[in-house]
Image (cartoon, rainbow, N blue to C red; front, top):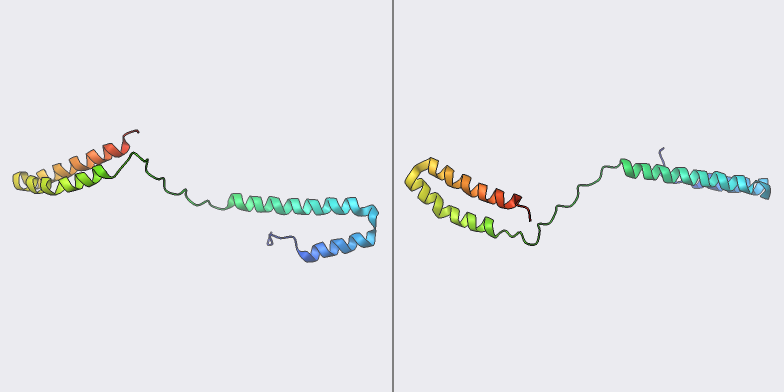
Length: 112
């Protein structure tokens, strides 16, 4: 189906035919018109259902979840990284950052 609207020319021709045929064909005219309108509505509804939906808007964080832990852990990461590199080198630095990431991941996944 190429058009989403009932063509005006078709409606005008149907009205003209109705006038020529007389009132005894009113029921048939009305039924045909209603069928065409129903077909158009069904086609529109099918087109809407076939259209890909946009993703849901991003969920807002729960009100009691604040970025405080993430901010504090990043602020603490600076001196902890320096101490870890000074005392244990690269393995110490990796250990500190793995611990920081784990604390934040566990906090994010914790049920509220």
